[in-house]
Image (cartoon, rainbow over all chains, first blue to last red; front, side, top):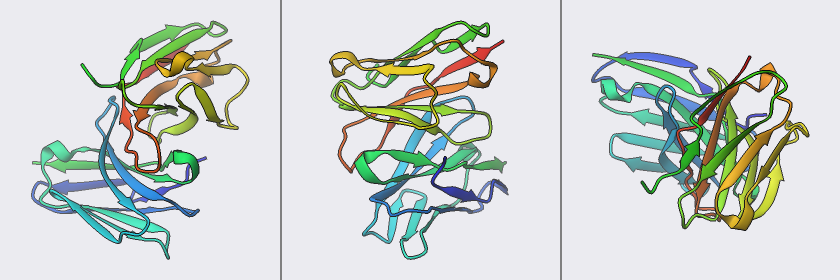
Length: 110
Length: 114
């Protein structure tokens, strides 16, 4: 079973636009992470936000976490064609086990 | 290459055969994870190790699946008597462990069961 659910399932935008995707989860967490996956490849870690943090930035990425609503959002600003990928949230609960959502497929067209 | 290495990258087998995948984690990482991913879905947790100890195994895994991590280094995932439903990408990841860890993923081993 998967802990998180991403929304939307798919997102199509043009270069330069912002992309926002959301993640909801069910149980308490230690931290929440976002990963990117290019087609047919392994996942790459993007950013980690701890349960006591509300917002975090890394380059063009901005992540928020609302533990009261059990939700997180990932914003990619000024998107590029190279941002085309699937994006997954993953929650870390007990013992460091990460559980992933089904992902948001993002397509950025030039 | 100091990343996570998985072999083979692709495996085609006939139903009923056994297959084994190998994962070499980043050398200083003591946690090692196995996930399975099917098309259009997120990675599904299978099992993970802290050094050589297997800490948890998904209840979704049948007894046909077994994983080992002898001496806390590389790990193997064996699937016995493969079924067509086992066709998937098998992903290995490693981390430093604890509650701070980002996972470093390999490129995966794609299994096709005919």
